[in-house]
Image 1 (tube, rainbow, N blue to C red):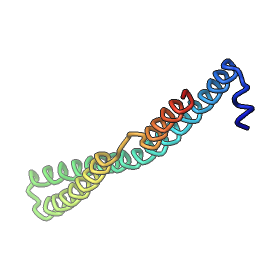
Image 2: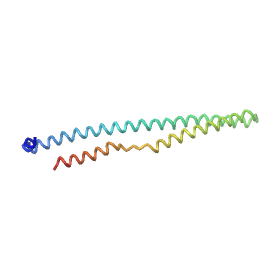
Image 3: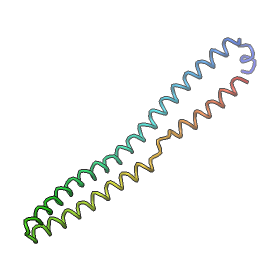
Image 4: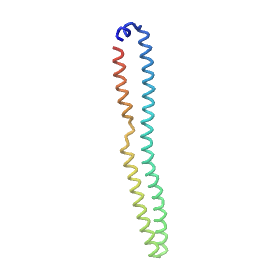
Length: 130
C-alpha cells in the first residue's frame, strides 16, 4: 500500500484531496443543518410558553377591566370576584412568560458539534498536506 501511494502523481494526490475535502464540507454542512434544526425546535417550545403567557395575560387584562367596571358600578361582590380572578390569571401568565424567557436565555445556538468537527477537519487537512 505504501509503495502504491509513493507511485501516485502529485496531480492524483491533489485530486483525491480535493474530492475528500468536498465530501467533508458537504458532510459538515449537513451536520450544521441538523444541529441547528434541533436547536430551533427547542426554541419553538420556549416561544410557545411566551405566546401562552401572553394570551393568558390578555385574559387577565380583560378580567381586570371587568373588575374595574364592576367597581365603578359599586357592586362589591361582583368586582371582588372579578378582581380575584384577574389577579390569579395575571400570576399564571407571568409565570408562563418567565418560564419561556428563562428557557430562551439558556438555549445555546452555537452548533458546537459542527465547530468541533471543523477543527478536526482542519487538522486532517494539515496532515494530508505533509
